[in-house]
Amino acid sequence: VHYCSDECKQDHLSKHEHLCKERAAELRDELLFRQPESTHVGDCPICFLPLPINGEKPMLSTCCSKWICDGCDYANILRQLRENLQATCPFCRHRVPTTHKELEANAMKRIAANDPVAMAQLGFTRENEGDYDSAFGLWTNAAQLGNADAHYNLSIAYAKGEGVEADQTKEIYHLEEAAIAGHPRARFFLGSFELKSKRHDRAVTHWIIAAKLGLDGSIRVLKQCYKGGLVSKEEFAAALRAHQAAVDATKSPQREAAAKAEVTGG
Image (cartoon, rainbow, N blue to C red; front, side, top):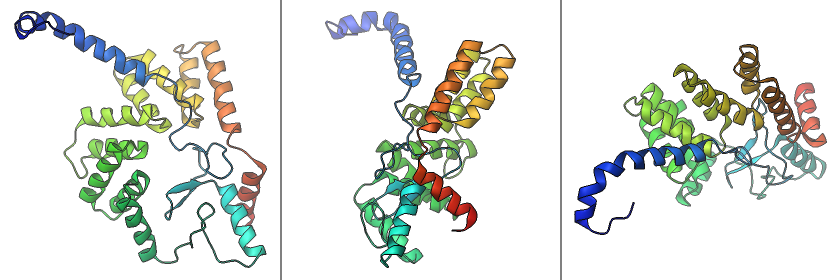
C-alpha cells in the first residue's frame, strides 16, 4: 500500500494491516505450492541426467563441489584402470584426495570461495563430530546463499535444539525454504505438519508435489490417503505416473552397470 503522506498512513494503516498480512500469506502459498522444475540436487554435470533421490547417493567431489552420479563415477574409474591413470575427479580432473587432511583442505578452499555446497557438507561433518555450534553456523551461511540442504539441516537443528534453541516456527520456515528450492523430503515433512494441524488439503498437495519429484515415501503416504478418501482416484493416478516418470528419468545403462558392479564387487 502506498500512502500519500505520513498523516494518511497513520490514519489508514490499521485498516490495511490485516489485508496486507492476508495478501502476504497468499503470495507465500503461491510460491510454496508451485511445482519445482527439478529436485534440489539437479542433474549430474557430466551426463546431464537428473540425480536420484531414493537410495543411491551421488558422489560429492570436494575439489569442485559437484555431485556426480554413480554411473559417471564408475565410468571414470574404469577409464583410469584401463589407461593406468591416477585417480582424478570425473568433472574437474583434480587429483582425488587420499587423506582426511586433504579433504578438509579442499573443503576450506571451496568455503573461502563462498561455495554453499561445501559449507553445507562441512556443516554435516561437524554435526557428526558433535560440534553443533559450528554446524549451525556453516548451515546458516550456506542457507543465506540459497542452499536447500542447509535449510533442511537448519530445520532439523531447530527441531532438536542442537546448536540453537528449539523453535518450531523457524523449523517450519526452513522446511518451506528447502521445499521451495525443490527438496522433496522437506516437503514431505511439511505435509506431516499440515496433517497434524488437520489441514488435509495442504498436506496432500505437499505429498503430490514431492511424489512428482520422484520421492518414494510420498507415494506410500498418498496410497493411504487414497484408501482413506483424502485423494481422488484421478489425483492418485496422476501422481503415480509423474512419480514413475521422475524415477525413470534418473536411469541409464551406465548407472545400471555401476549398481551391478557394486552388488557383485566388480
